[in-house]
Image (tube, rainbow, N blue to C red; front, side, top):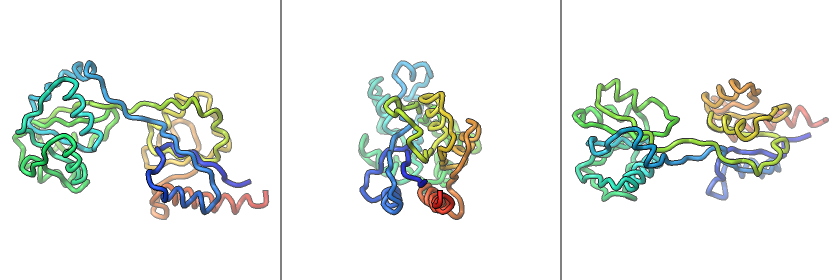
Length: 253
C-alpha cells in the first residue's frame, strides 16, 4: 500500500511548475487542490453597524492586498470619496504598489515597511499625530493593533471582510484521499462544517503552522505531518519526508 492521492486545502498553484507538481511527478501522486475557506466582504449594512466614520481618519494601515480591495470596495458602495490628503501605511513595498489599482501613486503619502510589523515602528512614530484606520478580517492577528497600542497611537479596527467555509458538498468521499493538507485553523473548522461525521481512521492529516497544528489536535484529530520544522521548512518537504518513511515501512504490505 502506498500514498497515492492528496487533497490540498488551498487554491491550485498558478504556475505549471510548483513544489507540489514536482512532488506528484516524483512519487506518482494524484493531487487535488480545493480551498476549504474563502474570503467574503462585509456588506455595507454590516459595516454601518460597526459605527465607523472612515473620513474621521487621516491614515489607513494596510496589511494585505485583500484589505486594500475591501477598503476601496466599501468606500465605493457607501459613495465615500477618500481625500487626496489621506496617508497610506503598508506592511510591504508590494502591498504599497498594489495601491496603484485605486489611487494615483504619490510617494509623499504612501509609506511601507519590510514585511515585518516591527519595521513599521519607526515609520509610524514619525506620524504619531495621525488617526489610523486598520482594515482587517474577522479572524486576524493582533500584531498591528498590538503595535499601535504599544506606541500609544490613536486607531480604529474596521472589519471589512471575513473568512467563511467553502461549500465542499461535491466532494463525496474524503476517504479516497490518503493525505489532507491544512494551512489554517479555519480549514479545520470548514472540514467539520462540511463533513460533521468525519472520522480520521487511516487518513493522514498534515498541518502548516503552529495555530493549524493546535486546531487539528483540539478537533480530536491525529496530527501526522507538521510543518514548518528545521528539517522541513515547507509543507511539500514535510509531506515528502512522510511519504518516504511511509513507503519504506509499508513496501512489503
